[in-house]
Length: 395
Ligand SMILES: Cc1ncc(COP(=O)(O)O)c(C=O)c1O
Image (tube, rainbow, N blue to C red; front, side, top):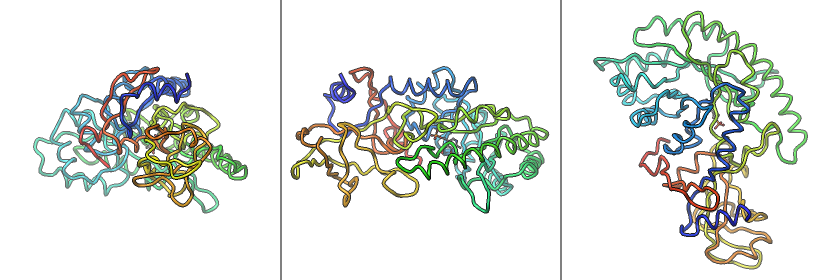
């Protein structure tokens, strides 16, 4: 039985649209991340999962430790549901959530928030000023891990803190202020971890990306090491987090890094097909029903316009995956309520048949579905709620 037959059989009792996670594929992807991490623990990026039960299943596997969450309200909710060791890896300006954190000693013991400037410290102090008693707030310092050369910059625009003396200044500022404790350092090299080095049919671009990534890795290993040394003189760091799905085996080689981060690798969405260093198995799919046949070689499915974030373009559209050989109508793309699909494979599709898609990214898929149906072999073992299915839309 091929994958399409297996998924169709497992979900025969369901009405599309719905989303599935193939557990065997996800377990294989998780095992490969652990192999690539070569002994260092992996913090699970919840933005790329967005389902609490699934997050718990992953955390129960060997090799994973802690959650990298994306908003403080999310972290508080996870902590309230028994998850421990949560790093909110993006700064927060949510005054209510900060006050709730400071007022809840148990949650404050499990959650770390990220800062990259004294302005963040001022902001947090103002938000928690009226809280009594006030729990100590655990902080993580975010470091700019982008590559800068020849007046150009590759990488995410994140922290303004780049050099060892800048990191040391902020660490000293934190040490001066009561109520804060610096426990972690974060440096995410998006230009390596999030950029595939094997872009389709563009050899020149591939060469450029590989050169940039090699130079960036060489620069970062020195700078990250120096920053960590400088900060360790001022604070007892519990962790130094780096990397992502696309860089696990490279980042783990750096002595200064104590743990990796990964999220997308579990579902292995479309954008992660373009790396030479690893191949995952597509694990999260969604099914849309064929609702009409406009003409020869064409079917129309219901919905489909689940575009991924990032620079807009064709790479952010879902991939019509199974049956193979379907493509979008160029003037319509992935539509709001209906999506025409062209190709020879359309000839064999009847009304009510499913077309299986992959999202371009990982967790954003979960904003469109209340549940993920977990498939093991050719059966659905259980539906688990997404964040949205639990009434939680954090972003
Ligand atoms: C701080 C941080 N670490 C790691 C990652 C990597 O996540 P993923 O493995 O889902 O690509 C990201 C993604 O944007 C991130 O923002």
